[in-house]
Image 1 (cartoon, helix red, strand yellow):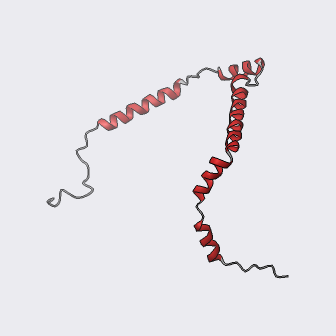
Image 2 (cartoon, helix red, strand yellow):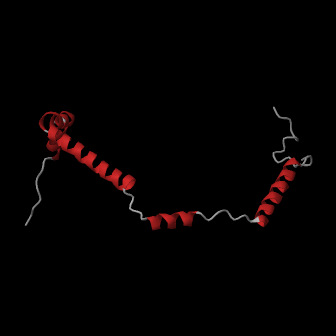
Image 3 (tube, one colour):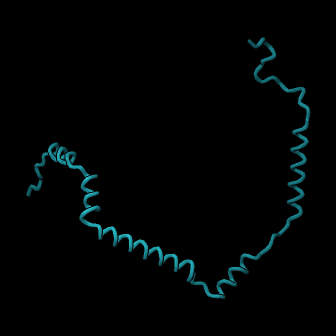
Length: 117
């Protein structure tokens, strides 16, 4: 059974181009189906209210869960003196290297050999 359809694609494309989709869309929403916009607005408002209530007014955590979360977050800071001293020594070494005087630096681009114009 051969179900191949003989369609004139050029004619279909020309018909599709001839339709003013913007006018049709605004006519559909503007005059004919204002109730559709109203229902969509009510749905979005109800859904937003539900999300707001769920996450702001009723977070769903019991007092035990809240206490467990607070205690897990209150660990404090552990100060590692040896790592701190290593960081300070590294900083001092970099500062000393920065302040060195570089007089005997090789001219990589060899600009001193010829006159720059």
